[in-house]
Amino acid sequence: MVMGELTQETEVAVIGGGPGGYAAAFRAADLGLEVTLIEAEARLGGTCLLRGCIPSKALLQTAEIVWDALHASERGVDFRPPQVDLHKLRSWKESVVDKLCGGLSKLAQRRGVQVLKARAVFEDERTLRLDGSDVTHLKFRHAVVATGSEPAALPDAAFRVGGRIMDSSAALDLDDLPQRLLVIGGGYIGLELGSAYAVLGSRVTLVHRGERLLGGVDPDLTRPLEKRLAQVFEKIHLQSEATEISEEEDGVAVTLRTPDGPVQDRFHKVLVAVGRRPRSAGLGLEAAGVRIGARGYIETDEQCRTSVPTIFAVGDVAGDPMLAHKAMREGKVAAEAIAGLPSAYDVRAVPAVVYTDPQVAWAGLTETEARQKGLRVKVARFPWGASGRALTMEAAEGLTKMVLDPDSGRVLGMGIVGRGAETLIAEGVLAIEMAATAEDVALSIHAHPTLSETEGEAAEVFLGSATHLFVPGP
Image 1 (cartoon, rainbow, N blue to C red):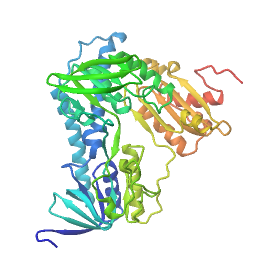
Image 2: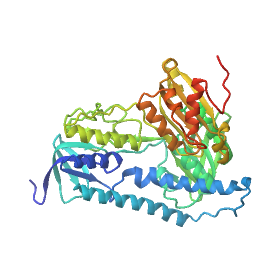
Image 3: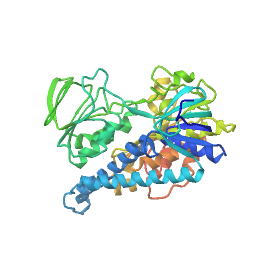
Image 4: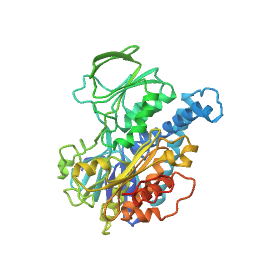
C-alpha cells in the first residue's frame, strides 16, 4: 500500500447518488446490508434533482401560471401583464432543490448509509479507486453502478457548448431571459424548456430533424401540443437542422437547412437539446470485466446484474427509457437481488410524461407500436371536449385513449394529452400491470366532475356504453 492511502471495505458500494443510486442504497440498508454510497457531487440527488427533473418542473410550473394569468380574461378575470423576476424565480427553484437534497442527506444518515464525496473508478471486480476522498480504495462484495447520463452533443458539431450555446443544464440556471432563443431538438427536453422560455417572454424558434415533434409518440396525442406550440413559438422548422453556428460577442449566427432552402438568422442564445447519452466511460468497467453495449449502455439481466455477477447497473447507464422512476425501480431490484430476494425488473408499463402545456403521457403498448408489430388491437378514444371538468379548465383539446385487446378487452396501453396527464396516467399503469379489462375500468366509479372520468368513459367507448359520447353500434 502506498503511504497515506486508506483502504476500506463494505458489503455494497453504490456509485452515483441519483434516483437509481440512492434508491438502491436505501433499500439495501433497509435490508440490513452495510452500504457505502459514492457521489462526485457535493449533494445527493443526481442530475434529476440538481439540474433536471425537479428544476425543470419548477420552471414549467411557473410558466403555466404565467400562461393562465395571460389568458384569464377569457373567464372574466383580468391581471396586469405578469412580470418575471428571474432572481426570485431562480432562488425559489434552488430552495426546492435544497429542501429535497437535505431530505436525502437525512434519510441516508438515518439509514446508516455512508456517503463519500469522490469519483469512483474500478480497479478490478472487487475494488474501487476513489479520487477526492480520504478513503482512496474501497473493497466491496457487491457494487451498483448508477452513474446516470449526460446531455448528448450534436454529431459532427463544429462548436462547443458553453457561453451563449447552452445545454439543458445551463438553460435551467436562468442567468437571463434571451430575447431570441433557438432550440435544437424536438424531443421532450427541447419542447419543455423551449415552451417555458417562450411563455416567460423569449421569442423561440425550434429546429428539428424529424418529420414531426415527439416522433415516437402517437400523432393524436401530439396534435393538441403542436397546436399550442404553434401559438407560443415564433417558428418551428421540421425536417431541418443547424448546419453552421457561430458564437459572437452579441449573439449567435446560425444557418439552418430547411425544406424551403437555407435560412440565416441570429439569436441571443442557442439551446442544444438532442437527447442524452449514458455516463459509462471513464469508470474502469473494462478492468472489472463489465460488458458495455454498442451505444454505451451497460448490459444487464432482469435482476440488473451485469456480466460480472457481483456488479449491478441501474438507471440511465443501463439502458432506455432514461426515466428517474425506472431507475428507482431498478435500484430496488438490484438491492433486493444482492440481499438474496427473488426480485426482478419485470414491469409491463413504464409511464412517460412530457411536461409541456398540455402535458402528454403514455404507458404500455402504444397504437404506433401495435401497428409496427402487426398486432390486433382496438383503440378507444374519449375527447375532453365531452368532459365537463375539462371545459371548466379550458382544456377541451385533451384526449384520453386506450389500446385494448379486441377479444378480451384487456388494457394493453393508455395515452393522455391534457392538463394533469402526469397524474392521470397512473390509473393506466395500474390497469396494465393488473391485467385489468375495459369492463374493470368502466365499472370502477370515477368521481364527477373530474378528468379521471375520461379514463372510465374511454373504457365505456370500447364497451359501447359511454354516457357523454354517442358511439354508433356495429
